[in-house]
Amino acid sequence: MDYNHLEGTIPASLGKIKVLNRLSLPHNNLSGSIPPTLGNLTALNVLLLQGNALDGRIPSSLSSCPIEQLDLSYNSLTGTIPKELFLMSTLSSFMLLGHNLISGTLPSEMGNLINVGVFDFASNNISGEIPASIGECHSLQYLHISGNSLQGEIPLSMEQLKGLLVLDLSSNNLSGGIPQFLGNLKGLSALNLSFNDFEGEVPKHGVFLNLTAISINGNDGLCGGIPQLKLSPCTNHTTKKPSRKLVMIISICSAALFITLASALFIFCHTSRKMKSSAQLSLISENYMRVSYAELFKATNGFSSENLVGAGSFGSVYKGSMQSNDQQVVVAVKVFNLKQCGASQSFDAECETLRCVRHRNLVKILTVCSSIDFEGHDFKALVYEFLTNGNLEEWLHQQLMGDGEYKAKDHIARLSIAIDVAFSLEYLHQHKPLQ
Image (cartoon, rainbow, N blue to C red; front, side, top):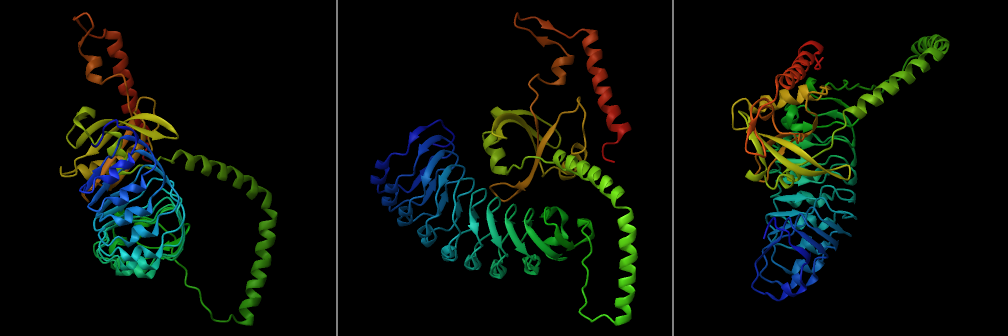
Protein backbone atom coordinates (compact mmCIF):
# COMPACT_ATOMS: atom_id res chain seq x y z
CA MET A 1 0.00 0.00 0.00
CA ASP A 2 2.97 2.24 -0.68
CA TYR A 3 2.71 5.57 -2.56
CA ASN A 4 -1.07 5.86 -2.57
CA HIS A 5 -3.32 8.66 -1.41
CA LEU A 6 -4.68 7.02 1.72
CA GLU A 7 -6.07 9.58 4.16
CA GLY A 8 -7.40 9.62 7.69
CA THR A 9 -5.96 7.92 10.75
CA ILE A 10 -4.54 4.48 11.38
CA PRO A 11 -7.40 2.49 12.92
CA ALA A 12 -6.78 1.21 16.44
CA SER A 13 -8.63 -1.99 15.48
CA LEU A 14 -5.54 -3.13 13.55
CA GLY A 15 -4.21 -4.19 16.94
CA LYS A 16 -6.67 -7.10 16.88
CA ILE A 17 -5.07 -8.80 13.88
CA LYS A 18 -2.77 -11.01 15.91
CA VAL A 19 -1.25 -12.79 12.89
CA LEU A 20 -0.20 -9.54 11.13
CA ASN A 21 3.57 -9.62 10.61
CA ARG A 22 4.05 -6.65 8.25
CA LEU A 23 2.38 -3.23 8.28
CA SER A 24 3.61 -1.08 5.38
CA LEU A 25 1.80 2.22 4.71
CA PRO A 26 4.58 4.60 3.62
CA HIS A 27 4.21 7.74 1.51
CA ASN A 28 0.50 8.30 1.93
CA ASN A 29 -1.49 11.12 3.57
CA LEU A 30 -2.18 9.44 6.89
CA SER A 31 -2.55 11.75 9.89
CA GLY A 32 -3.18 11.53 13.61
CA SER A 33 -1.14 9.52 16.08
CA ILE A 34 0.23 5.99 15.95
CA PRO A 35 -2.30 3.87 17.90
CA PRO A 36 -0.77 2.22 21.01
CA THR A 37 -2.86 -0.87 20.21
CA LEU A 38 -0.27 -1.81 17.59
CA GLY A 39 1.69 -3.09 20.58
CA ASN A 40 -0.75 -6.03 20.66
CA LEU A 41 0.59 -7.35 17.35
CA THR A 42 2.82 -10.07 18.75
CA ALA A 43 3.80 -11.28 15.26
CA LEU A 44 4.68 -7.87 13.76
CA ASN A 45 8.20 -7.92 12.23
CA VAL A 46 8.07 -4.91 9.90
CA LEU A 47 6.53 -1.48 10.59
CA LEU A 48 6.93 1.09 7.80
CA LEU A 49 4.99 4.36 8.23
CA GLN A 50 7.43 6.87 6.72
CA GLY A 51 6.42 9.80 4.54
CA ASN A 52 3.02 10.57 6.09
CA ALA A 53 1.69 13.35 8.34
CA LEU A 54 1.59 11.42 11.60
CA ASP A 55 1.99 13.38 14.81
CA GLY A 56 2.02 12.80 18.55
CA ARG A 57 4.40 10.61 20.51
CA ILE A 58 5.87 7.27 19.52
CA PRO A 59 3.98 4.70 21.63
CA SER A 60 6.24 2.73 23.96
CA SER A 61 3.94 -0.27 23.49
CA LEU A 62 5.67 -0.99 20.17
CA SER A 63 8.43 -2.59 22.22
CA SER A 64 6.05 -5.55 22.78
CA CYS A 65 6.27 -6.39 19.08
CA PRO A 66 9.10 -8.51 17.63
CA ILE A 67 10.00 -5.71 15.20
CA GLU A 68 13.04 -6.15 12.97
CA GLN A 69 12.55 -3.13 10.69
CA LEU A 70 11.17 0.20 11.97
CA ASP A 71 10.75 3.30 9.77
CA LEU A 72 8.78 6.28 11.11
CA SER A 73 10.80 8.96 9.28
CA TYR A 74 9.42 12.02 7.45
CA ASN A 75 6.44 12.63 9.73
CA SER A 76 5.72 15.19 12.47
CA LEU A 77 6.22 12.97 15.50
CA THR A 78 7.03 14.74 18.77
CA GLY A 79 8.20 13.93 22.26
CA THR A 80 11.17 11.80 23.22
CA ILE A 81 12.19 8.40 21.87
CA PRO A 82 10.81 5.80 24.29
CA LYS A 83 13.61 3.92 26.03
CA GLU A 84 11.62 0.76 25.57
CA LEU A 85 12.31 0.82 21.81
CA PHE A 86 15.99 0.28 22.54
CA LEU A 87 15.18 -2.88 24.49
CA MET A 88 13.77 -4.70 21.44
CA SER A 89 16.33 -7.44 20.96
CA THR A 90 14.66 -8.42 17.67
CA LEU A 91 15.52 -5.11 15.97
CA SER A 92 18.22 -6.21 13.54
CA SER A 93 17.84 -4.17 10.35
CA PHE A 94 17.12 -0.47 10.87
CA MET A 95 15.55 2.17 13.09
CA LEU A 96 14.71 5.24 11.00
CA LEU A 97 13.23 8.18 12.93
CA GLY A 98 14.74 11.04 10.94
CA HIS A 99 12.96 14.22 9.80
CA ASN A 100 10.46 14.51 12.64
CA LEU A 101 10.10 16.87 15.62
CA ILE A 102 11.55 14.48 18.19
CA SER A 103 13.22 16.06 21.21
CA GLY A 104 15.05 14.90 24.33
CA THR A 105 18.28 12.92 24.44
CA LEU A 106 19.56 9.65 23.03
CA PRO A 107 19.23 7.16 25.91
CA SER A 108 22.07 4.97 27.12
CA GLU A 109 19.87 1.98 26.28
CA MET A 110 21.00 2.37 22.63
CA GLY A 111 23.77 -0.07 23.41
CA ASN A 112 21.24 -2.89 23.79
CA LEU A 113 20.60 -2.96 20.02
CA ILE A 114 23.72 -4.97 19.22
CA ASN A 115 22.29 -6.32 15.94
CA VAL A 116 20.90 -3.14 14.35
CA GLY A 117 22.48 -2.06 11.05
CA VAL A 118 21.15 1.48 10.55
CA PHE A 119 20.33 4.33 12.95
CA ASP A 120 18.80 7.50 11.45
CA PHE A 121 17.80 10.32 13.82
CA ALA A 122 18.64 13.17 11.41
CA SER A 123 16.79 16.52 11.35
CA ASN A 124 15.09 16.42 14.74
CA ASN A 125 15.50 18.43 17.96
CA ILE A 126 17.62 15.90 19.84
CA SER A 127 20.06 17.36 22.38
CA GLY A 128 22.57 16.11 24.92
CA GLU A 129 25.59 13.94 24.16
CA ILE A 130 26.10 10.84 22.04
CA PRO A 131 25.85 8.01 24.60
CA ALA A 132 29.03 6.02 25.14
CA SER A 133 26.97 2.83 25.00
CA ILE A 134 26.69 3.23 21.22
CA GLY A 135 30.00 1.38 21.01
CA GLU A 136 28.10 -1.80 21.91
CA CYS A 137 26.19 -1.69 18.59
CA HIS A 138 28.76 -3.88 16.87
CA SER A 139 26.62 -4.50 13.74
CA LEU A 140 26.06 -0.79 13.06
CA GLN A 141 26.94 0.27 9.49
CA TYR A 142 25.11 3.58 8.99
CA LEU A 143 24.74 6.28 11.67
CA HIS A 144 22.94 9.52 10.75
CA ILE A 145 22.35 12.09 13.52
CA SER A 146 22.82 15.29 11.50
CA GLY A 147 20.71 18.41 11.98
CA ASN A 148 20.18 18.18 15.75
CA SER A 149 21.56 19.96 18.82
CA LEU A 150 24.00 17.35 20.08
CA GLN A 151 26.95 18.59 22.12
CA GLY A 152 30.07 17.21 23.76
CA GLU A 153 32.75 15.09 22.12
CA ILE A 154 32.62 12.03 19.88
CA PRO A 155 32.71 9.13 22.38
CA LEU A 156 35.85 7.01 22.34
CA SER A 157 33.66 3.90 22.46
CA MET A 158 32.80 4.40 18.78
CA GLU A 159 36.21 2.94 18.03
CA GLN A 160 34.52 -0.44 18.56
CA LEU A 161 32.21 0.09 15.54
CA LYS A 162 34.47 -1.86 13.18
CA GLY A 163 31.76 -2.31 10.53
CA LEU A 164 30.79 1.37 10.27
CA LEU A 165 30.45 2.50 6.63
CA VAL A 166 28.76 5.91 6.85
CA LEU A 167 28.88 8.43 9.72
CA ASP A 168 27.02 11.75 9.51
CA LEU A 169 27.20 14.02 12.57
CA SER A 170 26.95 17.31 10.67
CA SER A 171 25.05 20.42 11.80
CA ASN A 172 25.23 19.87 15.56
CA ASN A 173 27.15 21.54 18.40
CA LEU A 174 29.76 18.83 18.86
CA SER A 175 33.19 19.96 20.07
CA GLY A 176 36.66 18.74 20.96
CA GLY A 177 39.10 17.13 18.58
CA ILE A 178 38.41 14.73 15.71
CA PRO A 179 39.37 11.30 17.10
CA GLN A 180 42.27 9.57 15.38
CA PHE A 181 40.46 6.22 15.56
CA LEU A 182 38.02 7.34 12.83
CA GLY A 183 40.91 6.95 10.40
CA ASN A 184 41.44 3.38 11.63
CA LEU A 185 37.92 2.22 10.72
CA LYS A 186 38.74 0.29 7.55
CA GLY A 187 35.23 0.26 6.09
CA LEU A 188 34.37 3.91 6.73
CA SER A 189 33.75 5.39 3.26
CA ALA A 190 31.72 8.53 4.03
CA LEU A 191 32.28 10.90 6.97
CA ASN A 192 30.45 14.21 7.49
CA LEU A 193 31.49 16.29 10.50
CA SER A 194 30.69 19.68 8.98
CA PHE A 195 29.15 22.63 10.84
CA ASN A 196 30.11 21.74 14.39
CA ASP A 197 32.71 23.20 16.79
CA PHE A 198 35.53 20.72 16.29
CA GLU A 199 39.09 21.98 16.73
CA GLY A 200 42.65 20.75 16.53
CA GLU A 201 44.49 18.68 13.95
CA VAL A 202 42.66 16.70 11.27
CA PRO A 203 43.94 13.11 11.00
CA LYS A 204 45.94 12.14 7.91
CA HIS A 205 45.13 8.48 7.49
CA GLY A 206 42.27 6.19 6.51
CA VAL A 207 39.14 7.94 5.25
CA PHE A 208 40.82 11.33 5.79
CA LEU A 209 43.07 10.64 2.77
CA ASN A 210 40.04 10.74 0.44
CA LEU A 211 38.93 14.34 -0.07
CA THR A 212 35.60 13.30 -1.60
CA ALA A 213 34.74 10.99 1.30
CA ILE A 214 34.91 13.57 4.10
CA SER A 215 33.25 16.90 4.86
CA ILE A 216 34.59 19.10 7.67
CA ASN A 217 33.37 22.54 6.56
CA GLY A 218 32.15 24.97 9.20
CA ASN A 219 34.67 23.99 11.91
CA ASP A 220 36.84 27.08 12.21
CA GLY A 221 39.17 25.58 14.81
CA LEU A 222 40.53 22.78 12.63
CA CYS A 223 44.06 22.74 11.22
CA GLY A 224 46.47 20.42 9.42
CA GLY A 225 45.16 17.42 7.50
CA ILE A 226 46.03 16.57 3.91
CA PRO A 227 47.10 19.53 1.71
CA GLN A 228 43.94 19.30 -0.42
CA LEU A 229 41.86 20.47 2.56
CA LYS A 230 43.74 23.80 2.44
CA LEU A 231 43.63 24.22 6.21
CA SER A 232 46.13 26.32 8.11
CA PRO A 233 49.07 24.37 9.58
CA CYS A 234 48.90 23.43 13.22
CA THR A 235 51.29 25.30 15.50
CA ASN A 236 53.41 23.52 18.13
CA HIS A 237 53.26 25.42 21.40
CA THR A 238 56.29 25.25 23.67
CA THR A 239 56.27 25.37 27.47
CA LYS A 240 59.87 26.54 27.85
CA LYS A 241 60.16 29.71 29.97
CA PRO A 242 61.41 32.64 27.85
CA SER A 243 64.64 34.42 28.88
CA ARG A 244 64.72 38.00 30.27
CA LYS A 245 66.51 39.24 27.16
CA LEU A 246 63.87 37.71 24.93
CA VAL A 247 61.11 39.30 27.01
CA MET A 248 62.76 42.71 26.61
CA ILE A 249 63.08 42.32 22.84
CA ILE A 250 59.46 41.26 22.54
CA SER A 251 58.34 44.21 24.68
CA ILE A 252 60.21 46.75 22.52
CA CYS A 253 58.91 45.20 19.29
CA SER A 254 55.36 45.12 20.68
CA ALA A 255 55.52 48.82 21.58
CA ALA A 256 56.76 49.73 18.12
CA LEU A 257 54.09 47.59 16.50
CA PHE A 258 51.38 49.19 18.66
CA ILE A 259 52.41 52.70 17.56
CA THR A 260 52.38 51.63 13.92
CA LEU A 261 48.97 50.00 14.20
CA ALA A 262 47.51 52.99 16.03
CA SER A 263 48.57 55.36 13.27
CA ALA A 264 46.88 53.17 10.63
CA LEU A 265 43.73 52.30 12.63
CA PHE A 266 41.34 54.53 10.71
CA ILE A 267 42.38 53.16 7.31
CA PHE A 268 42.25 49.58 8.58
CA CYS A 269 38.72 49.94 10.01
CA HIS A 270 37.45 51.54 6.82
CA THR A 271 38.90 48.78 4.65
CA SER A 272 37.72 46.06 7.05
CA ARG A 273 34.10 47.14 6.81
CA LYS A 274 34.19 46.91 3.03
CA MET A 275 35.82 43.48 3.07
CA LYS A 276 33.36 42.16 5.63
CA SER A 277 30.40 43.32 3.56
CA SER A 278 31.86 41.68 0.45
CA ALA A 279 32.58 38.42 2.29
CA GLN A 280 29.04 38.23 3.64
CA LEU A 281 27.60 38.74 0.17
CA SER A 282 29.83 35.96 -1.19
CA LEU A 283 28.77 33.61 1.58
CA ILE A 284 25.09 34.23 0.98
CA SER A 285 25.44 33.57 -2.73
CA GLU A 286 26.97 30.16 -2.09
CA ASN A 287 24.24 28.92 0.23
CA TYR A 288 22.36 26.04 -1.37
CA MET A 289 19.60 23.99 0.14
CA ARG A 290 20.70 20.58 1.38
CA VAL A 291 18.89 17.51 0.07
CA SER A 292 19.30 13.82 0.77
CA TYR A 293 18.81 10.80 -1.46
CA ALA A 294 15.56 10.02 0.35
CA GLU A 295 14.18 13.49 -0.39
CA LEU A 296 14.99 13.20 -4.11
CA PHE A 297 13.57 9.67 -4.14
CA LYS A 298 10.31 10.99 -2.71
CA ALA A 299 10.26 14.09 -4.94
CA THR A 300 10.47 11.99 -8.13
CA ASN A 301 8.10 9.23 -6.97
CA GLY A 302 10.98 6.81 -6.68
CA PHE A 303 12.61 7.97 -9.95
CA SER A 304 9.60 6.53 -11.78
CA SER A 305 9.34 6.35 -15.55
CA GLU A 306 6.35 8.71 -15.43
CA ASN A 307 8.67 11.42 -14.12
CA LEU A 308 11.42 10.77 -16.69
CA VAL A 309 12.12 13.86 -18.79
CA GLY A 310 15.03 12.56 -20.85
CA ALA A 311 18.24 10.54 -20.84
CA GLY A 312 21.82 11.22 -21.92
CA SER A 313 25.17 9.50 -22.08
CA PHE A 314 25.91 9.93 -18.36
CA GLY A 315 22.47 9.75 -16.77
CA SER A 316 18.78 10.57 -16.78
CA VAL A 317 16.70 13.63 -15.87
CA TYR A 318 13.52 13.37 -13.80
CA LYS A 319 10.83 15.90 -12.99
CA GLY A 320 10.17 16.24 -9.28
CA SER A 321 8.37 18.31 -6.67
CA MET A 322 10.01 19.19 -3.36
CA GLN A 323 9.91 21.63 -0.46
CA SER A 324 12.19 24.68 -0.48
CA ASN A 325 11.88 27.59 1.96
CA ASP A 326 8.37 26.45 2.94
CA GLN A 327 7.30 26.44 -0.70
CA GLN A 328 6.63 23.56 -3.10
CA VAL A 329 8.88 23.90 -6.14
CA VAL A 330 9.13 21.90 -9.35
CA VAL A 331 12.68 20.74 -10.09
CA ALA A 332 14.64 18.78 -12.68
CA VAL A 333 16.84 16.09 -11.11
CA LYS A 334 19.76 14.86 -13.20
CA VAL A 335 20.81 11.45 -11.84
CA PHE A 336 24.24 10.24 -12.94
CA ASN A 337 24.73 6.62 -13.99
CA LEU A 338 27.95 5.98 -12.06
CA LYS A 339 28.37 2.62 -13.78
CA GLN A 340 29.10 4.55 -16.97
CA CYS A 341 32.80 5.32 -17.41
CA GLY A 342 33.46 9.02 -16.89
CA ALA A 343 30.11 9.78 -15.19
CA SER A 344 31.68 10.59 -11.84
CA GLN A 345 34.20 12.93 -13.46
CA SER A 346 31.37 14.59 -15.40
CA PHE A 347 29.51 15.19 -12.12
CA ASP A 348 32.58 16.83 -10.56
CA ALA A 349 33.17 18.98 -13.64
CA GLU A 350 29.55 20.19 -13.76
CA CYS A 351 29.58 21.01 -10.05
CA GLU A 352 32.79 23.03 -10.44
CA THR A 353 31.44 24.93 -13.43
CA LEU A 354 27.83 25.54 -12.42
CA ARG A 355 28.62 26.76 -8.91
CA CYS A 356 30.23 29.84 -10.46
CA VAL A 357 27.88 30.39 -13.41
CA ARG A 358 25.62 33.47 -13.32
CA HIS A 359 23.90 34.04 -16.67
CA ARG A 360 20.28 34.57 -17.67
CA ASN A 361 20.50 32.05 -20.55
CA LEU A 362 21.98 29.23 -18.46
CA VAL A 363 19.69 27.11 -16.34
CA LYS A 364 20.11 27.76 -12.61
CA ILE A 365 21.39 24.96 -10.40
CA LEU A 366 19.58 24.72 -7.06
CA THR A 367 21.73 22.16 -5.28
CA VAL A 368 23.63 18.87 -5.60
CA CYS A 369 23.41 15.54 -3.85
CA SER A 370 26.38 13.22 -3.34
CA SER A 371 25.20 10.46 -1.08
CA ILE A 372 24.35 6.76 -0.83
CA ASP A 373 21.12 5.14 -1.96
CA PHE A 374 18.99 2.72 0.03
CA GLU A 375 21.12 -0.21 -1.19
CA GLY A 376 24.41 1.36 -0.11
CA HIS A 377 25.54 2.35 -3.63
CA ASP A 378 27.06 5.74 -4.46
CA PHE A 379 24.51 8.29 -5.68
CA LYS A 380 25.21 11.62 -7.39
CA ALA A 381 22.66 14.07 -8.78
CA LEU A 382 22.26 17.72 -9.78
CA VAL A 383 19.03 19.60 -9.04
CA TYR A 384 18.03 22.37 -11.45
CA GLU A 385 15.11 24.71 -11.91
CA PHE A 386 12.49 22.96 -14.04
CA LEU A 387 11.83 24.80 -17.30
CA THR A 388 8.17 24.44 -18.27
CA ASN A 389 8.41 25.53 -21.90
CA GLY A 390 9.63 22.25 -23.37
CA ASN A 391 12.98 21.51 -24.95
CA LEU A 392 15.08 23.20 -27.61
CA GLU A 393 14.24 20.62 -30.28
CA GLU A 394 10.54 21.41 -30.03
CA TRP A 395 11.25 25.14 -30.43
CA LEU A 396 13.51 24.73 -33.47
CA HIS A 397 11.56 22.11 -35.39
CA GLN A 398 7.97 21.62 -36.39
CA GLN A 399 5.39 21.21 -33.65
CA LEU A 400 1.98 19.55 -33.86
CA MET A 401 -0.62 22.21 -33.09
CA GLY A 402 -4.14 21.79 -31.66
CA ASP A 403 -5.75 21.79 -35.11
CA GLY A 404 -3.62 18.85 -36.25
CA GLU A 405 -1.28 20.91 -38.40
CA TYR A 406 2.50 21.18 -38.01
CA LYS A 407 3.92 24.62 -37.43
CA ALA A 408 7.58 25.69 -37.23
CA LYS A 409 9.07 28.84 -35.75
CA ASP A 410 9.82 31.60 -38.21
CA HIS A 411 13.37 32.65 -39.05
CA ILE A 412 13.30 35.61 -36.65
CA ALA A 413 12.43 33.35 -33.69
CA ARG A 414 15.13 30.84 -34.66
CA LEU A 415 17.68 33.63 -35.01
CA SER A 416 16.76 34.93 -31.54
CA ILE A 417 17.29 31.44 -30.07
CA ALA A 418 20.67 31.11 -31.79
CA ILE A 419 21.78 34.51 -30.48
CA ASP A 420 20.84 33.57 -26.91
CA VAL A 421 22.81 30.33 -27.24
CA ALA A 422 25.77 32.26 -28.60
CA PHE A 423 25.66 34.68 -25.67
CA SER A 424 25.81 31.72 -23.28
CA LEU A 425 28.80 30.16 -25.05
CA GLU A 426 30.59 33.51 -25.21
CA TYR A 427 30.08 33.93 -21.46
CA LEU A 428 31.51 30.48 -20.69
CA HIS A 429 34.54 30.86 -22.96
CA GLN A 430 35.45 34.51 -22.55
CA HIS A 431 34.46 35.40 -19.00
CA LYS A 432 35.76 32.09 -17.56
CA PRO A 433 33.43 31.78 -14.54
CA LEU A 434 35.75 29.16 -12.99
CA GLN A 435 38.48 31.69 -12.42
